[in-house]
Image (cartoon, rainbow, N blue to C red; front, side, top):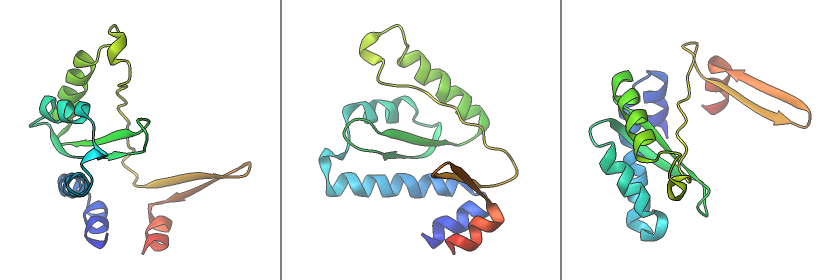
Length: 130
């Protein structure tokens, strides 16, 4: 966790991706039913574009977080995913591609507490996490 935090604070996203992939691969070694064939399909489709990936969620309703090696790799990955899992094929509608944008100002954590939205910026979050 400390190693990951160090990479995140130094914005070394390639290393973050490597750790994510290593963590996911270890999960799959312990529990072989943790993955689906579509994950292998995506791995093969995006070989060379990904710095790393991790699966989250459960029961078929999860998500795959992918960190790409560069902005150009990100654009190619999005294009390949959208082409492979086109909305026109009803059998492939289970895949949705989201391309989030992250502002250069740093980490912002938001959550809801009742009717209130609480937000922390990267300086506050770093003191809470450490």
